[in-house]
Length: 163
Image (cartoon, rainbow, N blue to C red):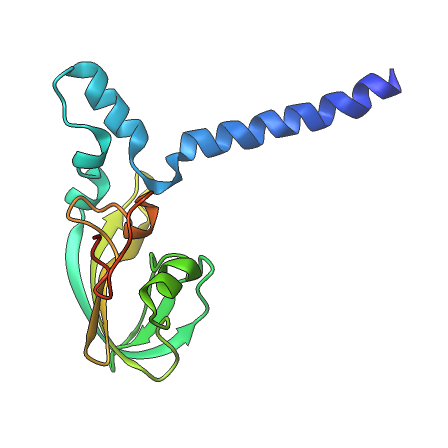
């Protein structure tokens, strides 16, 4: 009995972890796209469809000085001179390394184009679509709201555009 319990609990935990990842769709809007595609066989391919959350979001521009740059899911805090605003969605280190550009650091001046997203629970989060760091513009998402670092098999140039 102890042996069965020893292997059953980890197996159940693994199932929940896999299920959670599948349901999250890794931020790519796949779940909503698959539903749309099932409803219309002539629907655009998932890569061509916009992320509904971004399309319905409120565009905003944030200008200021980087106050805190923790990243790893914690975002970038910008001091606008009147308030501190945390912005998310800057991508993994490998994205920035591929561009040959350093992520914004504390004290640097930035202009961030972003979208304010409102989730079903009423919470809001500001997600960056592009950032200008001391005059250098870097695109972070395509016109459909999809992260540029998630495009498999494509290279990115200095401006964050795919080649």
